[in-house]
Length: 83
Image 1 (cartoon, helix red, strand yellow):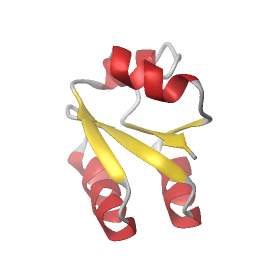
Image 2 (cartoon, one colour):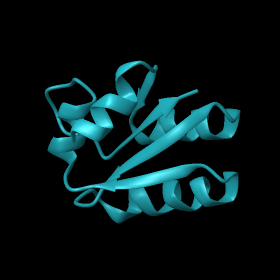
Image 3 (tube, helix red, strand yellow):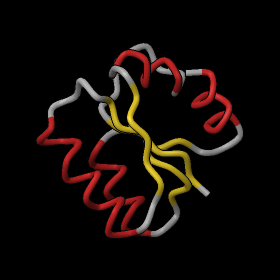
Image 4 (cartoon, helix red, strand yellow):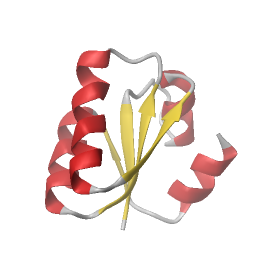
């Protein structure tokens, strides 16, 4: 989680699948983070979009961990650090 906080810390963060899809399509994403315990119906299309756009992505243990790393008090299925 500290690695994610360090990468996100100095960058703009996009949280949530809908906003993340928009960011990926705009080409302004540095890295995507996907929660392993999130609904695959959310994470699998985002993973495919990352692969298609050649964007690095990493799996995070849980939605709670990802939410905390992003500085929010609720879980997050997906998030991205922007360029």
